[in-house]
Length: 507
Figure (cartoon, rainbow, N blue to C red):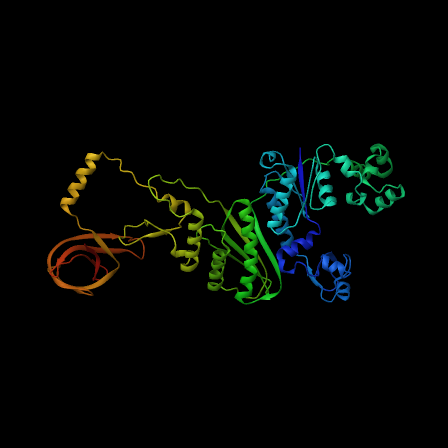
């Protein structure tokens, strides 16, 4: 078995720079808490050149470098960076173990046919991690311990050929095994400073003198894993969060922060082959409360501009009640289904472009105004419903309808319909109110907007009533009437109000 280890040095700093890439190259330090007493966990190269080291307090670091930027570590930022590291590994194979703290293991079984060499594969993994904003060192070996030591000691990309783990690990300093402080002192007294020196000792003798920790250290020095690779099925959770240094109470600064979160989310989704569905916003307010809301996405899309327009519309319609001190964005992953094309019809729009267009229409018109009409559960003539528009349904709607009738019957029906010349009823929505004069309960004269004339011929009435069990019940008498102006109209009388309306015009 060949394994790859993805290792991110100074993981708290790397997670912070992923969230704020504009601070790359500057003097930055990450502390374990707010305030001047926070302990420095990691520093950037620029801060190290100024003399700032890990272990100092924030006040001491500021005294050394006044221009130093000190940020407290954020659990949301660390969680998102670790998830991005696992996304980079899972884009190659589902057999990934999340070791936490900027460490992940990837099983390379079956990937050799896709790359010319393991070095090319390891470089591809490193580039994928960098694409997600995480600079990871990659080590490839036959065990987890050897791969981890290769990633930590080699730097960049290091590949240990099969069967040569001993030659690589022998000169590596013993500190990379991270022994306890007491055990480190003991090993230094014995003159053991490299992994090869420790691996050459007999396990039983070391166990007698150093106990279980010494036995475990010897086995790790020999490249033996404590447990095999344990790939856990990672949940499809795509979430990004950030803690604000101050409360945000206006829309534009909030959208600036949200743009960065959406860019990182869509990059992770693209790497995994997903599209962004509905967005769930969790806003931590200055009043110590939370504002939870869902932004409905009409069609899955990874275009940040369209998604940001949806979020803007949601926030403008329902603004937060207080300033925002922290926020999380959770994206629901969706897959875009491929559609079967037609040989005899032109291709429709690409599904991805159609999804973006629908997302923009959703942002411009609103969530309740984009969809497809459906038959409502009522007999009311003008009633209709609205259903969500799916990309697959829109693409499949371009498929041609094949007439399964015999050609002779189709031709006969066409000739018959051409000779009869049926009228087409053009519905008037909403129905137009008119004034109707009746004689013996029959319409005799109609007057209204755009029409006026005597009733030449009329058919009806046809009574329609329904929804009597609701407050919106209706009862109507319908007539088809030809007026002296030459038009043919469909009229109805609302029996509840005794008002007349034009429901349609025959063309």
